[in-house]
Amino acid sequence: MRRYSVFAIAREALRHHAGWDRAWRAPAPKPSYQVVVVGAGGHGLATAYYLARNHGIRDVAVLEKGWLGGGNTGRNTTIIRSNYLQPPSTAIFEKARDLYETLSQELNFNIMFSPRGVLMLAQTEHELRAWKRTAQANRLAGIESEMVSPTRIKELVPPINLDGPRYPVLGGLWQPRGGTARHDAVAWGYARAASNLGVDIIENCEVIGIDRDEAGVTGVRTSRGVIATRKLCIVVAGSSTVLADMAGFRLPVESLALQALVSEPVKPAIDCVIMANTVHGYISQSDKG
Image (tube, rainbow, N blue to C red; front, top):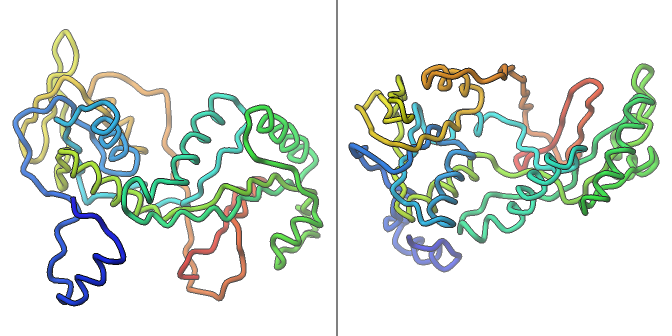
């Protein structure tokens, strides 16, 4: 894989950018793989990348029914945080947040990680007590997180109205190293790095059935033919129950859609991510405004 750098950009500029290679390969599916990952979003591509990088398992295919990163990865609020309450949650989310700190350098791809801080508003007395409890749990877990007063919130977010008649702002939970990343760039970066390690990323390849025997999975039936495998990873977000049904088991989860609104570009006004769980709303400002 050719490394991206300012020198590579300058060199290609002199050649009218005619020398860039594909970011990842587009191979035809093989008859069989050691591991098949269904879902070419951030999680699916990361699964394939770490299987190859950390465990040396490179006979891996990532199957995507549409285009890479076109599902939940390309349609989310991009928020990165780890200030959860329960130890299992804080552990895994802090591990992920910490990976984001250096992921651009590791993947040699700018994922535009912006640790601008995440502010979770407390707008009821119950929520204020809950955030205080969470702040203490975060401290015990070694996560940088603190309670902040309305005065401090006004300093962090000058445009905010603290005195709403129904839901006034009573305080907040502040994680300064939380933030956002460019969600599709995360997928592109993992795809490029995984492909370079030998992983086959196969787009426009929908899984329509899963074959099994007494010992377990034997393969998948796809819109591009049958692929044999004994190891199948289902990493398809809201479609997980659909794939589980194909595999013959039921997942005790229900997928619900959240709505995201993208405004027209506005001048910079909000420096951090703001979460208001009482009304279940998040807001942040992208690089485009």
